Length: 389
Image: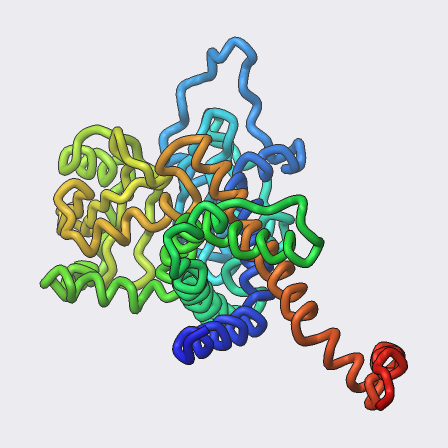
């Protein structure tokens, strides 16, 4: 092995042993989160589920203005910050309150409150926090982002170390020799398995790292696209004293006029007096489950301030729009979601086989050396077998 290759091997080993366990935890939790909504729907308490007639003849949906009012009546102590529209016929609307993780669930047909729950205390909410922040808030999110960068390095360095010097070895390195010894099988599982999954794991790591460092990613995408102002939201002129906000129904009608078609997926209400109301829509053919089209409106005049269409987004913004669907496998339907869930288990498997490789090569020898400084029974046996002069 050349000195450069030896140096890369040692660095690969150090990064893998340092960040491998973190990457394994993030990967396994991410595998479950690929089907987060399906799992959450199954384990949700019956009182929080939406009743859908078996014949599919559901009542017309309640106006979103009435849904928002129901949330405000239920929780007048906390401002409504986001209203997530039900993604499917059996799902409720979710009202996200400012300064709290409580979610108010509303029946999309009756417009009545089903109940509320703390998102951070549900099984899938805890799993999501573990995956994104390692249950440690913003500091944990940064650590998870660095773990993603480390995983990217492991994918790249592992591919370089896998690459054979002799083209005749390609066939040997793309398969596991199951008839060999246990040590060789473990080695092949790490080397060959890493080769087969490195592309998909690298995609998941890249998009996950971008999501962890979202502000830096947005700023970089805006600069690369030559439009650093694109990431900034439009500012609303201060309302006149005593001004009354335009009814939500009218704002939604104007949003539909500004961007016809599609469905509303989220409404974000202003957090500051100079902040706009944002309507997020999903148009046909989009991969993102919440859509990536934004209509900014003045909540007091109803004026449309700006429309950000996914179809006309600059390349940097297109990557930002695509990173979440790419991260969880929505880009190819159910098959790619299953592949992404399986790929999420790869860091744990590679960490386990890598640790075992290290143990077989170094760890067991060091333990024997500490336990038997003179070489132990094996050395004594070797000495007896050496003929005397």
